[in-house]
Structures are given as C-alpha cells and as structure tokens.
Image (tube, rainbow, N blue to C red; front, side, top):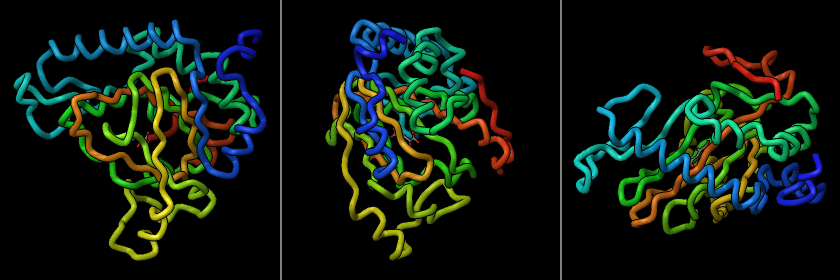
Length: 251
Ligand SMILES: O=C(O)CCC(=O)C(=O)O
C-alpha cells in the first residue's frame, strides 16, 4: 500500500466531507501514466464499437443519428471490467478500493458487477441530458456508493455531473423510480441548491446512492467520457430489493 501515499490517498478530511455532503472529489486519484493508459484503452474500445454493426449487446446509443458518421453516437458501454484489463484495473485499484472501504466504513467492501460497471459517453453534439435522480431510486438499495473516473475534461459546457450537496441525508424522494419528478413542488426544491462538479481526466468522484445528480445535454464539440463503478458494503445484499439480484466481487 506504499503507493497510497502518492496520488489520491485516503484522507479523513475528504471522508468527513463525503459523510456531510454525499460526494467527494479526489483530484488525480490515480497517477498520470495510469490515466493516460486507461484513456488510450477507452478510445480503442469505442473505436472497436464504431466498426461493429448496430445494435451491439451491452451498448446504449443516443437517439439521433450522428450526421458526421451516419450512425448513432454511443452513449454507454456496459460490463466494462470484462471488456478491458485497464478498466478492471481502475475498478480494483488499491487506492480506489481503500477509498471505497473508508467511505463505506467496511473493510470487506465489494465491487458491484451488475450496478454501473460501465463507460458513460456524453458524445460531442449528441450527448443527451441525464435527468435528476439518485441511483438508489432504481437500485432499490441505499447502501451503495459510486465511483466516477474521468477520461475527458468535464465542464458545464460539455455536461459535467451536477449534484445536490447533502441530498443523500434527506431520504429518497422518488423511491422506485429512475428520476425525480420535478412537477412535484417539494422535489423542485431539492434541486435548487445544486452545484456543478467540473473534473479533469484522471480525477475521481465518489458519490452516495441517495445523492441527487444530473447532467445537461452536450452540444459542444468535446465528448465527455468516464468510467463509473459501484461498491457495496458486505451487508448490502441482505437489504437489496432489486428484481435482478446484486452480484458483487470481493476486492
Ligand atoms: O455521467 C452522467 O451524466 C450521469 C451518471 C449517472 O447518472 C450515474 O453515474 O449514476
């Protein structure tokens, strides 16, 4: 664990911030050569997909045809840990795992195989909005946390993640739904205190399953790619109510 002292080692101040706010940004969580390798593998994985007929299993596409390519822009690639060793190396990296254990308060934290485990692409010009939601609303499990690892700069111009600090402490106002119904005035109030989380390639963001988040459409020429994984404490399976049972891997 010597390398925990370089890069984005766990620090108590950030752990406390996560407990209060429901999210925490860890700049350059993994070192720059590692990030460069993952970015290269992501580009290769997307290039491979771009050469295959549509639709492909485990791939979600944007609705509109990209006029430059005559194809649908790719929006999401699932089960990434099985697609490339570099993606698995992010999800199981000792630094990331130490963070997951610290934030979950559980030394036996596990990686979720069928929650997140994907690459999100908010493609240039065609990236669509991701409406306000908390992941626990569709996961039916409020014990999990997510880890987002950035592969491109994410700013308010290309649809970075926006969050409602502290919303994880208020319960889930949309249990059983994949979105927050903003026609309900009480729900509208939740998102008034939102903040954008701008990030650079190689940065990591941990966020609680009950944290409200959103991202705007990307109409800019700059894609925004990231990996996202979920981690579970060892008791998460016992309370899981999702019809597709939670599958995890020991770290
Ligand atoms: O990256 C985004 O735009 C949304 C991500 C998201 O909703 C999630 O990771 O749960």
